[in-house]
Image (tube, rainbow, N blue to C red; front, side, top):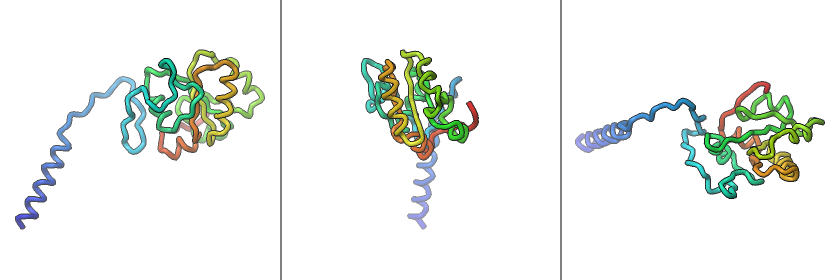
Length: 166
């Protein structure tokens, strides 16, 4: 009985010690929650392609890197979903601009975007968005990157998804 009582006491003390931390104060602009309760690392990310302080210079990001980049208010960027309208409506990254690469006006829509912006592009699985990044770089955009596993990787990683039309 003595050993059991000691183990119970230690368990209670450990539980109490783990719950004693103060809760952080809420912010006016909440950051979306990462899957599994993980906390995004502070910016800049060492594995995100960077040059002279700029991000997204034609590189490929993992869903985790993209999430961390999108969570950083100091790194504003435009997210572009290149999938079909029905795919977009079924689920997309919150705030994504829908520019379907299969649309006859796709090139014109890209041409209307400011060249000095920063863009994160994604498609279903990464192949189309890689080609769109190359196209945008050829058009004079400097700060463009894509999610290598596309929306499928984003969604399977448990990252936030928004549904509905643009």
